[in-house]
Length: 245
Image (tube, rainbow, N blue to C red; front, side, top):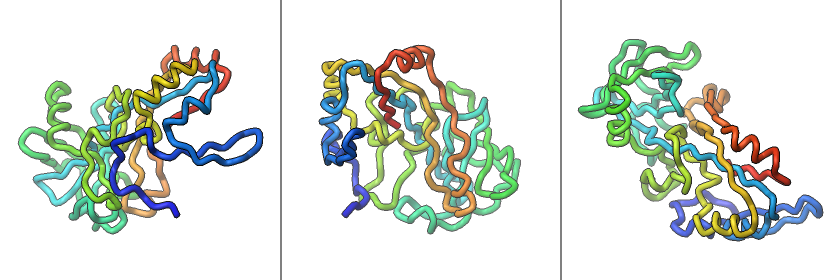
């Protein structure tokens, strides 16, 4: 019987991997460390190199938690607001936040501040923010004040390093690009030895839950992506492309 994991594995490549043979349709219960043996020379693995940001922010000025939705558009961030409670409560069981109309100033400790610049017409939980700090001050302050989005089925809170892949680069993802997390450097070395190439894209993986059924029905919200020219060329050359989300 399948059940949610209660904590992240430290032996990442011992995660289970379901392999479906495209020719015979047979199923095989494998491990992630078996991944290189399932591919052929000339295949291409495409990974998402978005780093997971500490997207969960507890305001010190209001009884709310804000979850950033992903990469900003210019200096504007989308966020979802939650009422009182913590990560031990299921998202759908969290109470609604207090009203946060446009113009509301939110403080997240002493050195991170934001102003609500807009509220979605169909859901007051969804809003846009503008942070007061310039970029060189904002990013360190965000990493001090925030933490990764948490999940109630876990037995302990996640640290930021628990939700990163081995090739995390640009800080774009609101939640972890978790399909790539089990790929250890040993597995990646196995791919290279098997003649399998690796290329990357950046995709701003967004929030998986909002606490409101109507808003959940709109997921995913807008998510940025970037595909380098080198990756486009690698895809064109490849025999077979395997995408790792």
